[in-house]
Image (cartoon, rainbow, N blue to C red; front, side):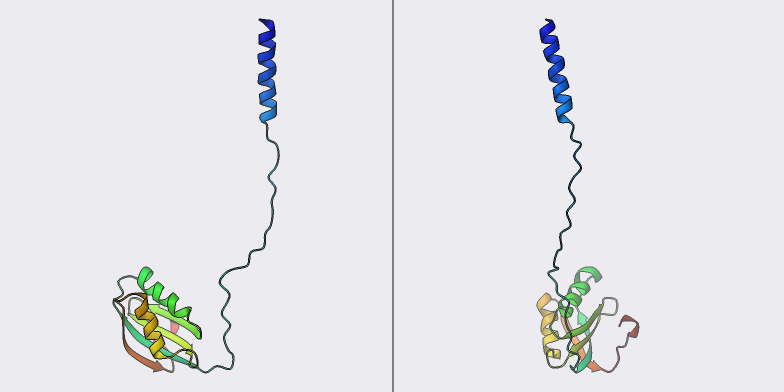
Length: 131
């Protein structure tokens, strides 16, 4: 009986001692290259500003933000802002790479319910605080 007791205590002691994990985790630093490269703008380009109304938006987060992101990703677009409350889009773009038709196509390609109305080229945006 004493042998079983001694073996039991020895086994429990062995399990308790061997289960201790005092190792500190290894910390590694890994450099990660971002997938979205920053757009380089042509310093010699001629930039134009356009304003237009976007009809069919139902929310600021889903609709306006999505349209703004799509326009901003276009090659040649320097600045894009879509104001949900006023249904107004303001875009500054390189005239050699972007034109009003391509802007309209980009907006309507996001969803069929979006319509571009009153597209006009302007010298300054009507909402300067957004630029």
